[in-house]
Image (cartoon, rainbow, N blue to C red; front, top):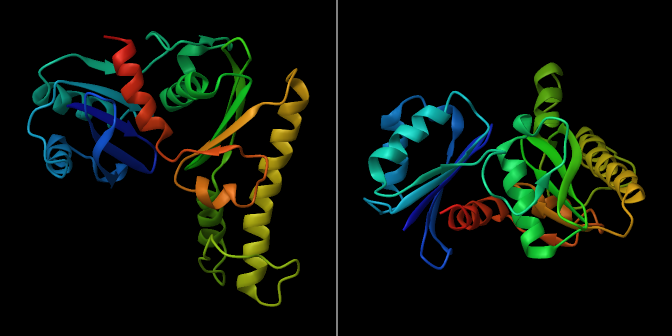
Length: 249
């Protein structure tokens, strides 16, 4: 059994992966709750596996990375792989500073290209909404980063005393007749329009129409609003981590 860890800005996912690279169990905890190794040990207890054959880690949270690394070293008998621009990915990182790329974007681009080929755009709807573009010949050529849907909403609610949280699912009217509807239009339609605009500009720079893969916690919500999205794969990053572990043995 392999331990896969995806440490994001909001949440960290721990997953037990079997020899067929299938997710057997996974748990999600707030990344802010990972303050020491005891916190990680507690989270791993939920997987029901005492000893792993190896581990693969993607972390975009420098504070949490050494904590996760130390716990992985204690519970794994085999190799521990940390995703970076230095490992084998099957794609070329053709950007100005590969060392500055988020490890999650590397995973998503590499595994997305492995599954679907190129040209490809992977959109990760998380704390940030990120776009990762892979060319037809397997080069990561760049992308875009914008505030995530929930991040934008939380920022507004935190600054506007009379505005409250909204639901992200369900229909949105063309014109709102109350505050809740007005917020849903502005937040949901605003994010949808921004994503569609960025996608359209990216497609205009790519020689042939790109496959668009959505992942992240809000990918299902946004895919219903964006016909440009070809596939929805909520577990793309964890599946990609398992695949990269095998590639780098």
